[in-house]
Length: 274
Image 1 (cartoon, rainbow, N blue to C red):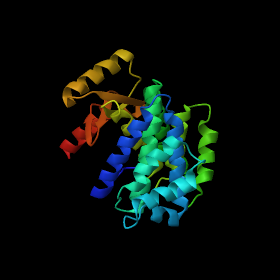
Image 2: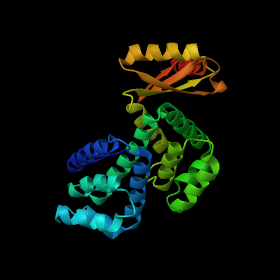
Image 3: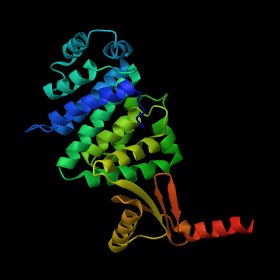
Image 4: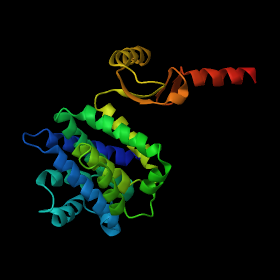
């Protein structure tokens, strides 16, 4: 999900992110468990309209909102999660929806922090990318997972059946959250947003590369170096093979596309002749 927040919510999220960083930076902090707890709270707020409105009500006493959340969740989530939620509900949000989006962002970041600490952020990012490509290339699967009228639990069960024991637990948790709450966007799109979020943690951009054939490790390294020179920052590569290109490759970084494929050159020639 692309996070679009108004000014008040951006300020609130920044404050909550500071609290999250403090909590996850403590000795013995379990960032994965914290992330899963925060995403469970997202599900709760998604189901309970009255609670969602109450904790986002900027006209009420912030301490009263904090007491409400602690009364409901003490003993059900960790003290670390409660401390993060204290910062969330004490702040002023532009709308209940943006508060929920903010908690979701915090949960995802906690999970990615756990992957980073464990030295497996690269693997999680790569798995998310590959799952996104599978979903996008299978219209029936994408439609099923993106169907907002289908129960979220049913879609999550399907994801677990497809992915459990095949991907990291953090990857699975993130994908389950995406299919459970794909508000207004396709699952493939939202998975790609997660890939970008993972890449940003290493201050990189993501290049989506489609190649006519497999790239060797040396070729990948040269391509990454060339893109680094072009964009002036490290670029992470996600490569998929499509023999229909005929030769060469297509590189997409953000909205920019570099088409060096045979098919692309033929299409350009046809445009010129037309």
